[in-house]
Length: 369
Length: 203
Image (cartoon, rainbow over all chains, first blue to last red; front, side):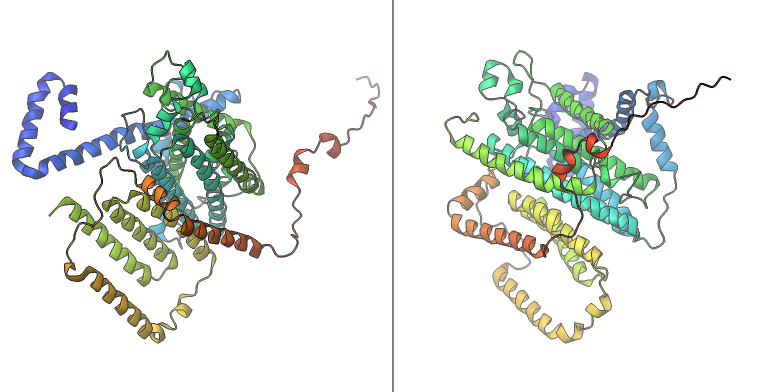
């Protein structure tokens, strides 16, 4: 796989060099060489996903401040570099140089494990996200299940981050956020069950392809056959749950910087920044999932335009801007309202729509054949 | 040595180490975290057996839900370790007996192939084979009655848990959200029209 791709991609004068390298490896390692090549190629592919992702995460913070600035008729960051474009770099340098103050009675190992626990799941889940029908790191059968199970781990970062510093306020904040995240995982899971039912697969590539078929797609207006329209209540529930799951406004009680204190009060410097990066990575992950599951991923909205990875990026960033927009618009929910919305509104809505779609699929009016 | 064997030993070593730490470590939170590590290694071993659905479900259910609740409880409780350790010597003979039984049973199952990694007898399937589909099909055809029975028991459990927390009428002063939503400004604020009382002063 890698050998053929590189032989096509590399400029001509490098190919003899590359072939020589392959021959050298073959001679040195013998039969283990193909395994080593596969390993190196996998690591390279993972880097090709992760490195741009981290850049996008850094600029997501910049984008957020700019967009919210425009909404509030301000300029946003505009001092560092042209248009303030180097602001994320300046922020990064700032948090790196800041001292990490470890509370005296903190459990040091767990204290530093917590940011990793919240950042790693958000990165791992990208392993199965398809960017188009062949650009996917690992196209596994149960990729949606994989994403669900990996993202369910991120709650550990919050719980451990609240417990490790041995501080009452952080601990209470952690309890609050963990309860919120667990609550919203249930409507999310139920919404996904409905999506799985209509697309008849757990594979993200198949789920997207299934959205390209249907009555409206046959007429050329593809965007009407994407999941958002026939599953509209579920789409709304899922989108809102993504907000709550990523701890974003109006459900950002995790931070609650002005009235209640979050789980990361005892963190400073880079340790705190990792929590923030995890939040933005999880948010991007949520945007990508919304665009894959409900907005047709890389499918083009109309049939006279070709399907392309650009559509996927446009949709993902569109949802991302929606996140910013909501943050600049809505006030923060009260905690009991957050819990009520999750348990008493979203779960019943999902259960009812699950039954409705199940009956719909068995009736002659089934549109998902 | 085959690469798969290497991976198996790697995961198995972590699994054994983590499981040992679960019972030896003093801090209950650390014990719970080691249990999480043990679950991860176990799910890795299941993936080696091509049981990807079980492996992912193990992470989703045990790590993502059960252990989180465990941590919740362990963090909230004030656990006195010395009192927990009081009966250690007292219970040791029973514990040893159980441990010996388990070791003997495992030895019997593994038989002569002990300490030797062998392929599972389950027929190997290609990468295109969907584990989830197979499990689902079995659950809803061959095992549909046990499956329904288990779900009814779980439902009873949910209802029982909810019923246990309901003790008499709630004493909170929470406001009914629908009343909150439909409140109008006129219900809360009375606007009074007052004529201006400014006197004509000349400065």
